[in-house]
Length: 171
Image (cartoon, rainbow, N blue to C red):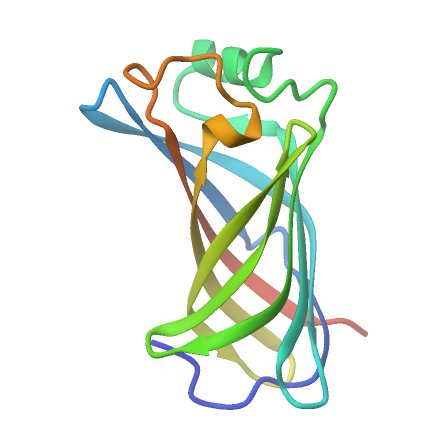
């Protein structure tokens, strides 16, 4: 479902306890490997014209978790996320535009200290005066952000990101 009412103005904060970030990548071209990251903060600014003018989301790189302990250790290490040196993953965008199927934003994602452009599709937007929710999806080319130690025939080139977010109006 897409938004059918105007967005309430103000600053909104992600409810990090109710927001999930899923990362999925194809392995060996045969199956998808999902993992999660924890959002640590996020804000959405909606102006007096009821338009989203700024979005910032921070995730804890060291929170990466898949169902495989050995994979988790490798991804958190120097070859992939280097979470000890680069503890956060960030996303930022300016204006969010309405489309026929929802909303679209162009922004940047910073992973492992490298910033890359990212296009985000936003759907299932529902806001009232005190709370809101939405789902954002994007595809990141891991080779352009320095997550390039594994050959693409083993680990797919694209990381599919899905953020299921809840937000509350900041006081």
